[in-house]
Length: 329
Image 1 (cartoon, rainbow, N blue to C red):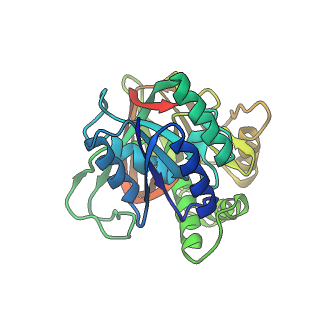
Image 2 (image 1 turned 90 degrees about the vertical axis):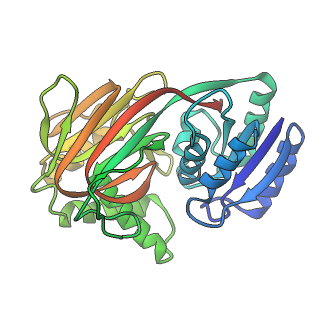
């Protein structure tokens, strides 16, 4: 079997030594080529090339951003039997999707698990999500460039989460800190979250509305998290589960929040991190196993896919696509 290993050398826990060990291990079962990413979007380009070239297995070594780019590259022409199988070796700080598939957090152990699964033929088709954003005057892309022509962006794939509002604001703040040389840690996200909540205006005047087919719209929201798996993310080893029922055996789950004060917000955060997470109460809205939804906002809001800030928008259309991609489990 032909395989391409796409490695992100800038990922949090990826080192050249680990990469070389993995190449040797994978080469015991696969005909492996190695490609290292050099810029944002490179993993997507490499994955699209691998799909066009008929590679059997694409292996990623990096964080959730690398996995997202690889999935988007593999699915450039949409799902189908000729799309290479995706295998994920964790190399980032959180590795949400890899952990959702049951892989070890250690990259060497995860590689051994992947090889065992390839020998046994243990793969499965998983559902993924797509999201397209409304652009126009007042919106920006991830580089800060202002939107011009009105319309919706081409749908992008996400593997574990999409979000609009507060969570995207937190991710934007973290990315700004990382650009200044700060290391990605749970503490960095906590501080960014506290600052965004205390200083931000959106939780005081929530601008978002969520629409589902056949149901009345729910307005007055400042946060909307769409999950394809649970946990949604981790703070170190601690899982954060706003939508604990989310699973690869169902559609999408949504956790949304309306106007809340500091005390109630802290209460709901504790609920999502409890041993038996079940966040409920005033200001909390939850939906399970959705095929799609639409979010709109009266003013531009940040949006993110799989933990990557993508700019600001006044609307997000999200859909679940069953059996979108084959993965090694």
